Length: 75
Image (cartoon, rainbow, N blue to C red; front, top):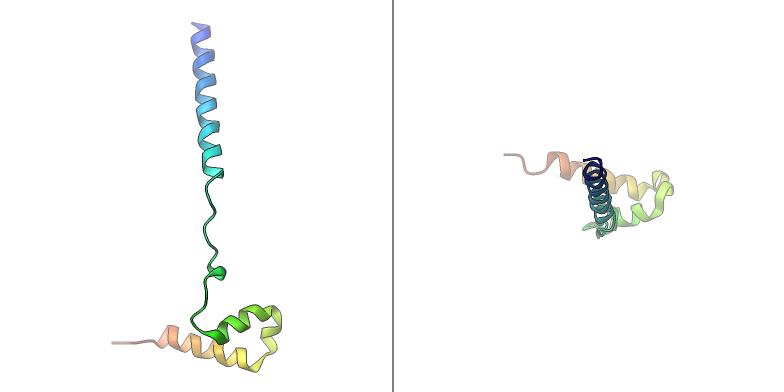
């Protein structure tokens, strides 16, 4: 009886480890930043990094993007 419990427990542990290993080997999803931007000004600002905070063109692009997003096509 003890052998059956030991083998059963071992089998459950091995199956769990195989399941976890299978999840880890899946291909990672594409990060949103890797997707090409429709707006070239926003893409340029994204590539500038923290220097974009002081760039007037980036501030204008962000303002326009916020206006498009929040004010969009309201019914």
